[in-house]
Amino acid sequence: MRASTHVTVHEIEVPLSQNRAFQLFTEHFVGWWPKEYTWSQSALRHIGIEPRVDGRCTEEGPHGFQVDWGRVLAWEPPGRVTVAWQIGPGRVPQPDPANASRVELRFIPKGRDATRLVLDHGDFHNHGEGAEAYCKAMASEYGWPFILERYREMALRLDAS
Image 1 (cartoon, rainbow, N blue to C red):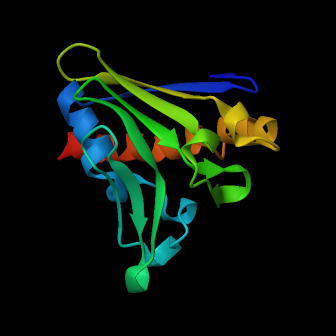
Image 2: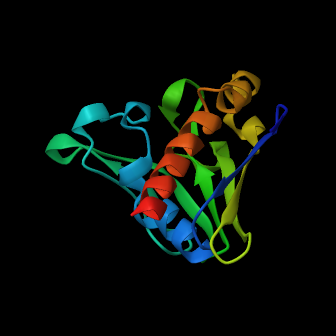
């Protein structure tokens, strides 16, 4: 893990092919993303990434509640997806993409049945005040490491089935 005011990088390995690892991350987001890290919490209905450039990353909750987390900047299955991260410091939605950071995910094959996921969250400075603390929070054990561990746990369950 590397962290500064502008970037935090995390890597994990999962026992899935590159294609399956990409699909798990992008198509089954709601199955592994920590519900406690959503606005809807236990009432969460869906989180999804529209599979195209300029697609939305959206949370859906009860009674029609919906909030966009960001927009897809790059869609290159099964190797890479990049999202404008429009959640700012203090978990405040950032509707203006000029105030978004960037999350890039690279899925790197490690043999036939394993993939290394590299998450690079950068451009925190776009969030303005609180950017440095936000970067540190996302680099902490309760940020991306916690979130990616949930993804890895789901990958392990898939591999075991």
